[in-house]
Image (cartoon, rainbow over all chains, first blue to last red; front, side, top):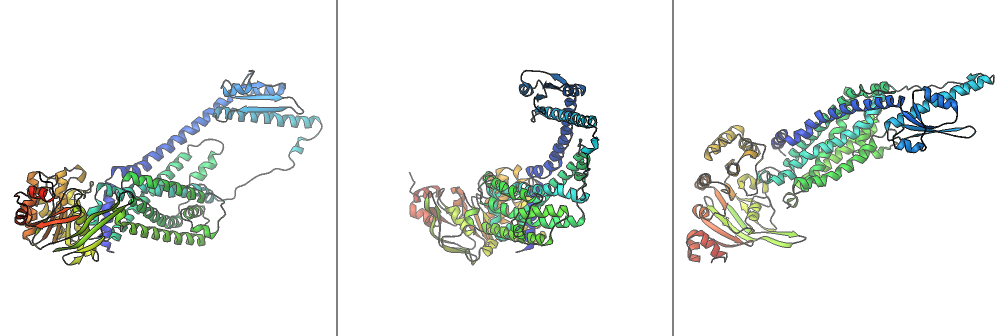
Length: 394
Length: 245
């Protein structure tokens, strides 16, 4: 194995990627432009839609069938417009009313609120009606107790408060950890797909593979040079996309409005990325990048064309999604043996690292296992590179 | 020198069954000789050349190129050869100069020697006008010249050239022919395959005709003329294949 040859092949592949417009679009333009644009639009449009629904809910029309005068007055005084159609539910589905309220006789009488939860305004109107009627109910209870000579304080024998003692770092780590591991691992496989296809099936299709094979280099040197280039491309894509996502979400968090917006902004506005965390993350991600590159390399090499390679690699995305997603779930009970499962283990570890709560035993198992898998995948890829039935498959 | 000894290659396809692409082919190419390997499409020429270039492993038999066995020492064989096949493309995102620099590195040439040699080849094949143009912008002829230059880059003792003038105009084809004759004069061993009969007749010292995987005839032009009673190689070729009118 000659380092100078591996370096020459690596450099050529990187130059090729740098000059490939399609690779630059998927690796650079999409992360740096599309994601921020998408998230910016979402964080501006969605809060505005929410605000509009809440505003509309304040003066919406509601269909009613109410006998009790106090109920009717409470609704009328709030600014809602009352209408009395024959078919209450029909009025909601037909959108002539945002919600409907029906009182059925009984002891006590029951009040039913009908909403269309697929419509934000209807849902917000239903929340407003519930709020008003709950206030009314509480007032009538207190008045009833007072009239009976009972102090309304009997309703509140003790107060209950809840405080979150988790640090800000831990809270943001929990929020980001459930998402970042999954996103990062998926991006590594998805972002690396195009460069890997181009280096393998693409070269076969363009007939440049043969000239490389006829040169006095070992097959293993070619495999290593290409795998290294693919690994770098994967890491670059993942880093750029992740960085762009993090910046976009942090900026977008400041646009969020509503009841829990401050808490949301505090959690999502910070991300725990001190030096120690970054080192642990890097050591977790690196073997996965090599594993991803080698596995995709071996699969794509088998294909006769880029299109065929894509067909073979797409199912791999589905294989990656499930363990990556599972690994990011909070509160999952695990045993050390589970940390032998690739992708799942990395997702779990990333979650734990960001949470600031990772077992070094599990970390060690993950690192060792993924290094072994990366080595095995690379070995398989190199073996395939030596098989003429794969290289000249037509 | 190339020594080919009962070289065979069999492909097995689940649908098509067994196909003997090359069937016990034996010949030799001497130092300072241009040996023409001619045959119709599907005769086994490219498969034979690929085996000699160590891209395919023979099913049986072997060959030695400058004393190195293609089965036992494929790496050493590849150091001895400059190989050009009809199925070899160029890197579209690299310029000819960059491609040649890359292959110079793969052939272990130091930068000074590489630079000198690239300059010589660019001049030889009149490539300076497009040496720094990306491969995907080049015409077929320009690409072919670059591919030939790549085969000659490291000045190998053995050249295996499969249709090197394909896609070239007359003037460019002449440059390739001149390079082949210069290689012969320099004592290199040249195994040459072409469909252009006039070119083969002009360049080759001896000719081997391959058909259905078998090497049916080997001889000089004089020997082939005597055997068939024909003058032109085109007529000799058709006669040997049983296709003469």
